[in-house]
Image (cartoon, rainbow, N blue to C red):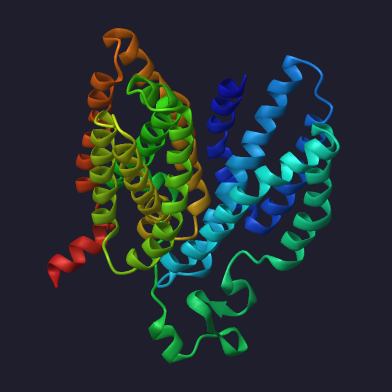
Length: 371
């Protein structure tokens, strides 16, 4: 049920992206927050399998899907030159919530019930999140007399000095972006990490068991990956402002190949820890790079539509991720050969990263040639 709900929700993310462009992030936060609150109340009354499937679908679409898509398109509206560090600071919220909510849920469930836990979050979404989104969020700095990166615009018009310091982006529509080779190359670059990371996560316990490593070791590695990934994500936000995005995309897939190779050799606790550290480093770089590539390449105006397609591909990649390792294990009766075959995906990613140069409109290219 969870897998089917995830896949169905992922296929609808492209439409959510279009709504972000049409209605704006502020209104979408209000709508998504309200529907997510309803989904929480609905899940508190689940009594059968089909209701559970519907609940999973609503949570995946309006929770992890839309609640990730909207802020990932909001922050780039407000920053251009400082976009990387802004996304780094945004990542703090994700890490903090990932640490807090499981503990809070466990406490509420143990103290009252799982039904109460759903209802608590539904009430807080309506009472806290939705009002804050409505009164506190603005879609673009231009809407309130500002320009990106914190510059003020007295009287609603930028001064010459401010105008000169603002980096103007070229805004591509989804149709225009889809006509470029870069769009499809980046889309593949976005889908592959979702596939590979989900595959490793789902099969990690079995892979470690094959090497006589305990389940506790697998849990430790997952925790270590998250701990290491947080500071790397924060640092990566500053790095992406200095290094070309295509170079970082290439680095992401180099790290994936290294991580997969180390996992094939993970026959001791020390190598298991090394795997966790390297996985955390790679995930930290990947988290910021895959979020910043779309606004950096295709601008801010139609970011919702473009990011919606990317979110759809990521979810589909996640849903399909465990399949290659599972089929490989059935065929070879071992994960080693399967992991080496899985390396084909980041190798494809390396090729796409080399092709993923920032696109330029043909008229601009021709003008440069004439000059």
